[in-house]
Image 1 (spheres, rainbow, N blue to C red):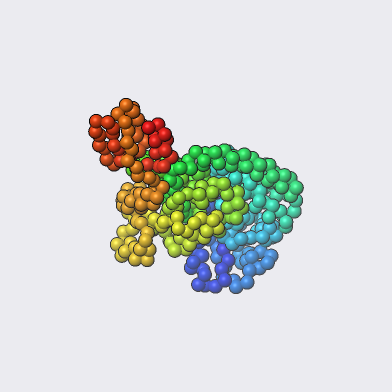
Image 2: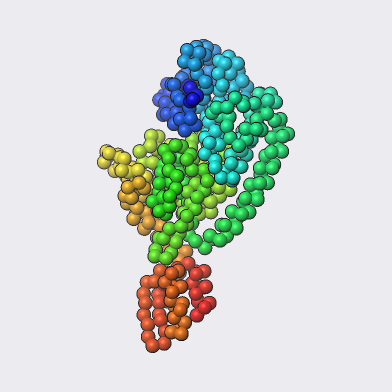
Length: 411
């Protein structure tokens, strides 16, 4: 049975109200991803929020009547609530109340499947609970279940600050062990050209990942369908592979606890040689979403020079003028459809251009008696030209330096 939800927001003026309607559409999508049923939205225009309940006294009473009339199970505020505001609202309206941050944490808990993702989500939840402990007393129990309560950390909801900190310490140590394993994996991949997919949630990163790698990956319209950094290889030149990593999506007001907890996963983006900032070309508030991703990438320390803007889903733009306007506004961007494969050659050509400085061109001179090396050369390098004479084979190749050094050591 789905929880019956009303979305709530406070705005300072009427101008902000129209923008907030779009934000609430995103909040509705988040609610549905978490398994809730949105009955409607409730917006108050009020210049100064109430310190006690955020909304004014009259609006709180109105919201209470609506909740009773429609048998509402949950209120989700788009605004950030303090612990005391949550407590006061719940006491007056008698309906469980969470804010956008708790909802996003809940969705992350829902989509955490690997050991690392589950540890990261629990850590983020505990960080959040620690900030919410003041004002809710020593009991955080919401074990009745439902949106905003699930996740690997549920059993810890009824602990005091000391126990939460102990659990945080334990999780950090566990993640540190996993980080060492990831470091070994990174070292093994070090000589490869590395690409990271970054973007607002539901921009089509997993679809592009699947199209480029031909791998069978989970693709869904749900927000935050991908939590685990997934790395695969694909050939950009014959026998020359690049690594591409599909990472978590970003979103407006992403809880800082998640940024902190997912630091190791986000490190894959930072350490890439090319970051494809993928944008849903059909999205509302497109410019705002681009800026949110840019700011998040900046926050985790990404080099701006490595970032390339790629607009996706151009097959869903039916007004030619809209596409032309985007191309004028973002002249250096690439426009593709990951689903249909439209204009992927432009993206691949960009990758080929960026990878050039990581590759080395070399003419290998192989004595005839070492002809057995030809098989390895044809398997591991891109052969540009082949000549032979009585004494040797002369092969012009393109490859990663370490592969060339390995072959040269055998000649």
